Length: 568
Image 1: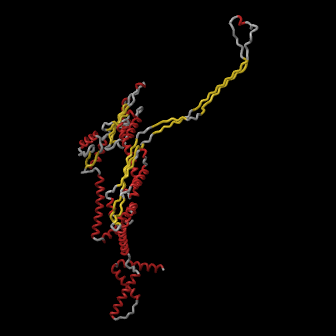
Image 2 (image 1 turned 120 degrees about the horizontal axis):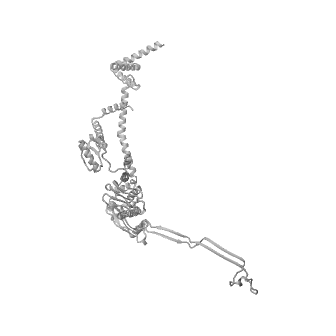
Image 3 (image 1 turned 90 degrees about the horizontal axis):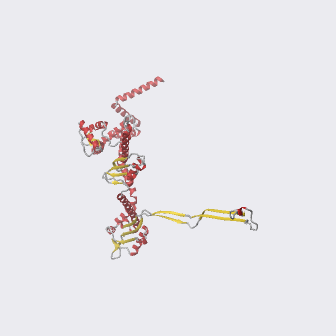
C-alpha cells in the first residue's frame, strides 16, 4: 500500500473541503483523540491518584506495620487510603517494592512444606515434628483459602502421641476458622467438604472430630440443625413457588387465545405439599413351594437269627443242652425306609422410599375479563363506542373445566378452582378508542410483533446502508476523482486526443468562417491546414512553457536519428 500517495490524496481532499466541513472533521478527529487519550492515560493508571500509586494491597496488620516501619526508615512519604493498603509516590513505587520484598517483607503468616527446603544440623525429633505440624496446617489453610467464599482461614491440628495400648489411644482433632467474604456463605456441602478435606489429610482423623467456625464464632457443621432446617425450608419454598408458577402459566396459555390476550387473564395457584419422606420395606412369600433338597435312607437285612447264649450262670450253662428242650434258632428278615424332603420358601423383599414432595391440595383463583361489543345507536347501527358484556354461567363453567383439566385438579383430594368475571380497568377504554388507527395498531401488533427481532437487524442493516451511501461512497468517489485529476495532470502536454482535435477544428472552422464572412473572403477552406495550424500552435505553447524539456526531447530524437543512419 502506497501511504505516500494516500496521504497526498487526503491532503488534496482536505484542501478542497469548505470551511464548515473542515471544522466538523477537525472537531470529530479532536474528540476521538481526546477520548482515546482519556482511556489510555487516566483509566490505565488504576490506583494512581495525585501522584501516588499502590505499593502493597491486602496486607495483614502485622505485615502492614513492617512495611510502614521500613518506609519511615527510608524516608519515603506514604499514605494509607483504606485498611491494609499503602500508597507511595509513583516514581519510587517499583524501586521501593523490590527493596522491601528483598528483605522478606511482607511475609506470609502461614508456611507450608517449604520449611523442609533447608536442613538444620542438630535439629531434634521434636523440632521436626513441630515443623511438620506447622507445614501441614499451612498447606491445609492455603487449600481452604482457594475456595470462592473464603477470604482467609486458619487450621489448628491436635495430634496426640501414639500409644502401644489400644485402650489409651486418643483420636486426633482439628479446628478450622474461616473468614468469609462479604455477602458470601458456606453451604452444607461446602462445610462437609472442608471437614472431609482436613480429615483426609491427617491419619486417624474423622470428620466428626473437625470443628469448623466462622469469624463470628458460630459453629458450622452437619450437626447444626438450624442451618439444616433453614436450607431445607428454602429448598422446599423454591420448589413450591416453581410448581405454582408452572401451573399459573398453563392457565394463562390455555385461556389467553379465547379471552383475547395474556393481559386479560389473571391466575394464582396455591399448592400445599407434604414434604415428609417415608420409607417402607415389605416381604412377600410365594405359596408355591420349591424342593430344595431330598434325602432317602433304605435298610434291608435277611437270614437266620444268630444263636443266643443264655441261661443261669453255673454248671448247667456250661454243659450240653438238656434233652427235651426246644431250640431257639429261627429265620429273620429286616427292612427300614427313611425319606427327608426340604422345601424352599421363596420371598420378595421390596423397599419403597416416598417422593420428595406429595401434593396435598391445590387451590386456584382465576379472574377473566368479559367481552366488549359495539354499542348500537337508535337506528340499530354499531358505533365506535364499546360496551362491556359479562360472561354467562355456561362460559364460566367451560373456563372452569379447562382450568381443572390443565393443572390436574382432583376433587377427591379437596382441590378447588374459582373462576370470576370482572371488567379490567383500562381494557374498556382501550377497546373504545379502537377505530381505524386502533385497528391498524392491532394489525401491526399481530403481524409485526413476531418479527420484532428480525426488524432490529433490518434496521441496523438500513443504517449501515445509508451510512455507506451517504458517507463512504461519496468519499470514495471524490478520492477516485482526485486520482483521475492527478493522472490528467501527469499526462504529457503533447498528447492530443482525437475528440479534442475535432472540437478544436470545428471551433476554428466556425470562427474562421465567421471572420472570412465578415471580411468578405471566400468560403473555401482546407481542413488539413487547420489541423496543422492547431498542432503548430500547441507545439509553440509547449516550447514556450517547457523549453528545456522540449530541447531534451529534440536532442534525443536527433541522436536516435543519427544512430539509425550510422547503423544503416
